[in-house]
Amino acid sequence: MPDTPRAARKARVAAFISGAGTNMAALLYAGRLPETHFEIVLVAANDPEAPGLALAEAEGIETFALAHGGVPRAEHDAAMEAAARNAGAEYIALAGYMRILTPGFVERWEDRILNIHPSLLPAYPGLETHRKAIEAGDPHGGCSVHLVTQELDAGSVLGQAEVAIRESETAESLARRVQFAEHQLYSRVLDEWCARPFRPDWLLEELRRRALALPESEERESHGAPAFKLAGKSGKFFAHFSDRHHGEAHVAVLVKTSGQEELAELVERDPDTFYRPAYYGASGWVGLVLNRKDCDWEQVDYWLERSWRAVAPGRLAAAFDI
Ligand code: GAR
Image (cartoon, rainbow, N blue to C red; front, side):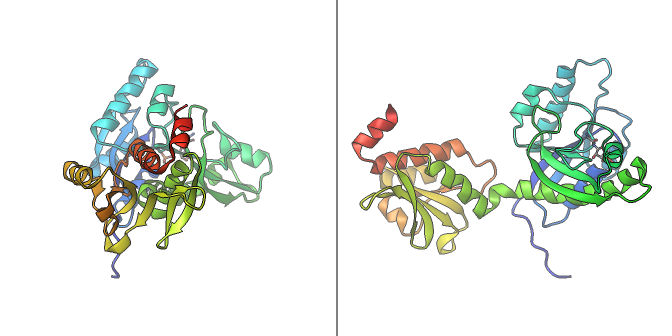
């Protein structure tokens, strides 16, 4: 068998279900392939009889169930959320979870809850999607994976798959075929979403947005890599993007410290975050690792600003403070 690339690290995902759990199963098995960037660590349901729970148990996955009947919504959500946190989940995949989450829950997990919906959104949010697509005479039904926001089925669509609607199609026959498509789509989209914080192109885009938000900042290449400097001929560089330069293990941003003492202290205190970069280290630049679990973008912002201040003329820094 050819060698399969192994994901650098798998993100921990909790799947919330209400029923059969076929999408959860598709995610579970996809997550076990060496090259995927996620793994299902918990299956939680709002119905203790949900058939998907038994499957998850048979596969040795932790489960949690709490019937929602008679439990206030906020309390039920809090129990589901606690189960996800206790399992160390970093993302939640709603997989046929037929409950609307409370706004606070959605807010705390912003950009980290995905849902699969059986229509080509924005068409047909809500229920009875297949019947509606057939009755409207649509040539295709399908499914969408989207981010969960407070408005039902309205978050950004991350991926879709179309499924042809045949003559004499019924809602049931269409639903069955859409599920094949769902099982393909969901695992791919979730994989891509979880891989993002490790991908150099995504990290550069995120860094670029933040660095260019600083006053009079512009992007220029430096030694063949993207870098950020103050505008103008004599504007100095304040950040360099490094994608495993000089054989280093990291995707990082290099920023200016106050000198060798601070650089050494940072690396000693937090070696998972900071490192002494080749060549640049000699002039007091520190490497801040971006391709790691839970990269702290506020910390990146702090260092970008500090580094920018170190090269910005006084009048600019003063204007920025105002
Ligand atoms: C799936 O078809 C999913 O798209 C749908 O429930 C089914 C669950 O099946 N979700 C919704 O309608 C959400 N509004 P599964 O339990 O076999 O994955």
